Length: 264
Length: 117
Image (cartoon, rainbow over all chains, first blue to last red; front, side):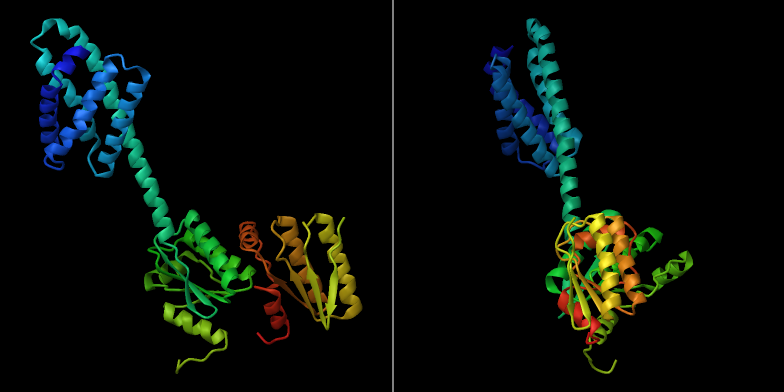
């Protein structure tokens, strides 16, 4: 079988490429696909003709790499796996006429099935990795601590505030407070879509941690709907200063630190 | 058991905790401080915890208790130099140390006591 495949490798790769390119509907060029498949095909042949563990390992690695790049480029898992399964069809078309190769073809078919499943798994793993990376990136991007003025820093919160975010915001904010010696911190919640009891709890925790360090915390960016929800839920912000906009909070903080600005 | 020294600067008592806090040392500190407050009629207490990296609920509560005791002697307590990790731990423990004032560092704590901040 291996010898047969080696002899007809060009033919098989041609047919295989044709099938895969049709399946990809023009998202990869035929030449590019052919190059990938040629590599794969020769690795398959090597693995079959007793290449041992090394050849099998190389084949798996190449396949995993291909599958990962497909996942990153937004191909669906079936498109990726079908690309591998198409080799079976390509070989079958040739083998069908040669009756004595059919039993061996079954073994070959099973091997390709395994490879297909493996592509699937790698694809899923690659996707998971992409999602995890994006989540981390989002978490890091979404919590900048900015310096508004000498001794006044602000954290514009964007997105839902869960415990993981709160923890990160708290750490960043407190570290910045210690590093800059700022005495006022503004938590701007303009970008927080909803404030429920849980979010409020997280905000209160952050404020009390800031106070423990000896700084003042102001919550700004309270939208009308949010204000109504807060009151309806009976959330008490106690003696924490709350302001409608970041500008108001800045003025408040400037006044508290003994600086006067304009007629406000 | 290690003792925490209490320094008198004018009308302020200065306590800098530079050891790993054990329960007994905190209790001892509380006792020493009460006696010192009674003897010196100090008006303010500054507790510097810059070097404290770990607190538990007991120590958190004792810090609040020290604040309450000082108030009985008409002295104000300012906790200075708390580390972010310690602040997070205390909030997670639900201790907001009401009745104790806080400042970022000893300088700001002194300014707070002298009414210049």
